[in-house]
Length: 322
Image (cartoon, rainbow, N blue to C red):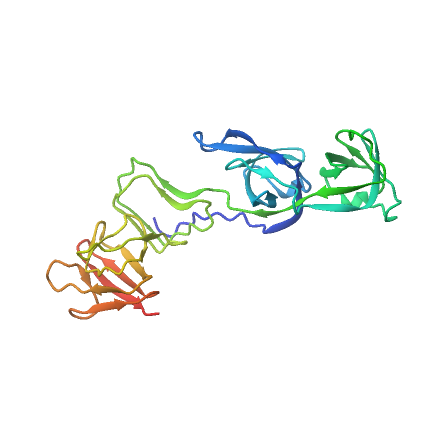
């Protein structure tokens, strides 16, 4: 497979004041796409419902007690969304409330601007969509605004408001990737399979989910690059991971032999985080062929070495000394 675009771009950036909610904790449920995993469900009001869709992964900025909350939109009915979180989340008011300009009274489910605090009643511009408000320590939802001075609540306050300050709750929303993985290889896949010059950018969890194990699987020049860590043992043997195009070397053990899947055409780039000696094959069974005869590459941290393999040996095609 060459040149495939398996990326995922949701692509709208940050949109201000898009969602509102009543603070509380998600209820436990089965995850939408993983039957064995427990997730959380919550209802969120969409102040701008035309900007979000079922199936999107979005971030509700600062919505949780611990900060941002990534949610999957499972359902939208009118302007109420059922969202799924990957675990139990407490939705918080901290940092998400803004006081309305004036004071308010209530009678049953009718909310009325008092006008005696700031002399500025602007309910029709301050409230957009079904917005959760807090008055006298209780949360109610404004379900309809009828004018600059009046609105309708979902339920009456326990004690009618009288010249009370009201805070509204809304949060910004940022888009995220929709799909979790760019490609999945099931356990029955036998190979050989070559993936080159493919774009896996933007997937939520991993570019490639390989359940097939160490099959004849070559990955080269993909974005984002598959990065794995591997180090030589005390005898100079480095076991190459089954699927990656970039290997991070974190041990100072010298390297003179690559073992494992070094299939014909496989290209590997080694990124060194420490000083490491890479020894050229001198005919004693080693299989790294560096540029020049019987030489050693004394790599330092941040240096790289790139090789192309033929099934038996791997030949240097370039290096970067940084």
